[in-house]
Length: 421
Image 1 (spheres, rainbow, N blue to C red):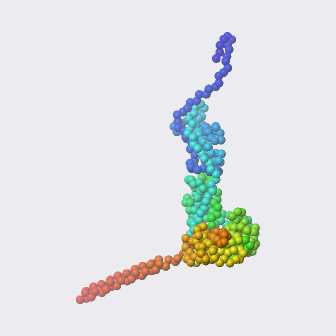
Image 2: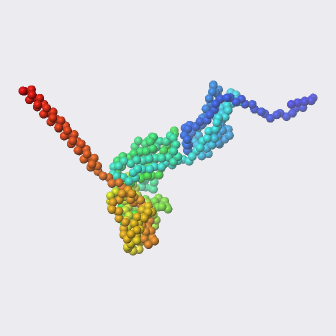
Image 3: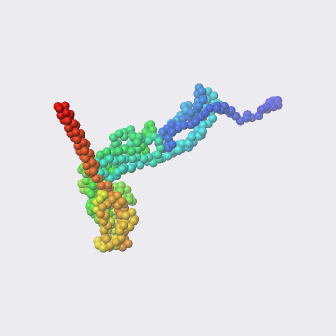
């Protein structure tokens, strides 16, 4: 404003910007539009303007990292991390008239999770020779778009690691989350991982899962539990000349026989057991033996090392390190349920079944052995009844055909006889 002569002017007012808001529909979309996004994946954030005609737009964004971000195109691609989580909005601004813009879109929320782990399960885990094995791969946080990649683990004998070999047909991944291995004849280890998107974003590899054959690792003395002062030998058997023995204790880390024993050829000799651990053998050709859980204690349960077959007889016993003979009052438990508490020293199961599979332990005079797991395998019965049925069916069919031919032959003879008369 002004007044007087000479003119007196006030200061200029603060600027006021007048913007024209165009009544068009604006929305933000995420591509791909998976419900779960993981750190490291690439996504495209797109601003869609409906009814904008031929207007040329610039695009303004509100993101978790900045209050204003502008682009000349209606999308931008980012490799997400956990800091990318948050709300996204956009609007269009007329390129020829910077004071003309659309309304802000509705908010879309992006949630970014840690890179997921794949989990592999195998069934069955104990082999019958030539059996088929089903692998199943699951992602920790299930969501859309995954393809699954399947690998066989091959030990690298030069170090403590494994290398992974893709299984046939999984180079580009499979849509199904299961994979069948046919004709499995020996112990093997497998891993899986999932991938999606372009370029492919992969989950972490699963932990190895093993399919065990029945008798590739021999333990001497042949039992699961041993006294702490016992010397134990683990012998690896299979179609390989190079083996290594590995151990995984309950309270430690994965290690080799050379760390706690002596490896001679394919046998690992241990002079004393000071902790419980799982042992197994690995070969450079990719074979794994069955795993054996061995414990060292002052009172032990005498139980089978390897799985027993349905119908077999099994005897469980209890021993003290002192060598004292147990005469009575030995209690046996399965899954912490008392099975036997009479004068018998041994627990004898005349014919085991699947119901006998579980954890066993014994007690005597206030002392208790550790638990040991007994695995029961299904008894494979040759299908004689099926074969007998098939043979009987074929014989009956042949007899029926012969009977029909005989009837036809006799009828023909009668017709000839009538014709001659």
